[in-house]
Image 1 (cartoon, rainbow, N blue to C red):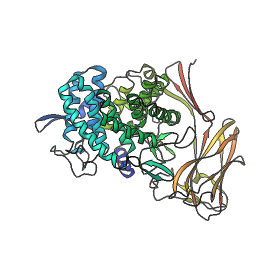
Image 2 (image 1 turned 135 degrees about the vertical axis):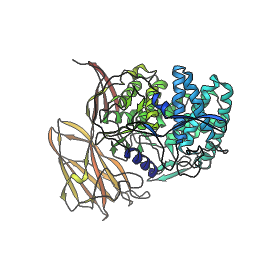
Image 3 (image 1 turned 180 degrees about the vertical axis):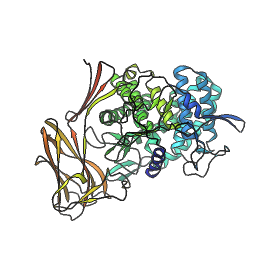
Image 4 (image 1 turned 90 degrees about the horizontal axis):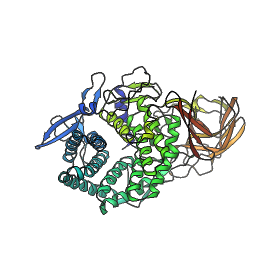
Length: 593
């Protein structure tokens, strides 16, 4: 998905926000309640066939249906995911009503498929297909990948429950796979280069294609088809190749999402770890499972310790947190626990899912088990909650709970509460004081650079300019220092950013890059620095032989050992500790007084 469309979608989501005061966490059980999702459903008959539509928006306080203005009343995007929820429910509970609803939802998905295997997305009020809207045109985009996921999973379930109907799903699934092959094949094996990074050219939306890989895995588990395996191999290869960073190097082993940026990662829809773990098990591809483990061990645990975020672009942003992003963490951890039989991942999954029960920045229960509503989002900066309960938020909340339904080691931590965090702090460059030269505070016309985002204002620095600030530390400790800086398209080695802590040089980072253009990224500067208890100074200066302005966004101070402590009940605690020195995670459980 293009970044501009994503930003528009999030803006629309949060424009409906109804700010509320945070309320306490209440352990009201882990009930997977389909009531609100059912209330969003509408049963219709199109061309003589019974179908189910899932309406898109539902607004506080009455939670009636709200159409997507200019788009339609329902879409494959949401109805396909509703089908997955109903299929999950049938598989877990054998609820026949859920199987019937899944069938009608799948009928709609098949109805929205074109003769060439691609999909339209929206239907209008008169049930005609919206064939012209930018979010509905026939393509193999997000809605096609989700539609395919529903078809593949549906085929696996109905292959036993209703073999005759499974044949119909099979035909539509293989038709979709043909369209997928046409998308993958022309550029398969080719790479584009962006800012020096090699990006697989046969995939554009890596996040969307993770949904396609989920669909292929579900289908292949029931019917090992060679052409389906071929699609799996091509997508799996592409997802693993678009993964960069390490435990202590940005972007921390992330599977990146958009082929237009090798430095931007967003939470929503990033199901690559979930998909690679599942597909790796199906095809016995250990490399894929290891790729999934890398992102989970490096990035996902970093998020658990820091608290939920919207994205890294490259600075972690906590404003627009949605169920669609949290579910991705839960699914990834849950699938790895099943594939590796490592209970640690189940514990991580439970802690991630505790966001829904109130363990979040607003301390608000984002899934109401009494109604089945999943609320639309949290602004982690203002602590405000969007009380609307649309299809996506409700579906993703239900999916997350379903993911840990049969994982007792995850269920134990569903109601965890954060006691304390010891993690990174962001020092915005505009809050530093000039120490030499004439650095200039700049207010960007847009936070969006074209492939990344500034975290606030920036400071333009020429060689000879310097900045300085004072920070407080509660203890003596070792830290890592990172700089969010816009690298210049200049001969490499012609400009350096020097960073000092307490007047000791931490390191000098090259901020000139002769790849293709200027770009914003996060650089680890030097090795370890030491903070002393009390006041400490952090200084930054630019030097080099190019009279060019370098834009500094912020400096990040990262404890060499970060941790988060959670309380699971009145007397039990669990602590996640991440050691950037030995690059390992540890998890400890103990009883309190």
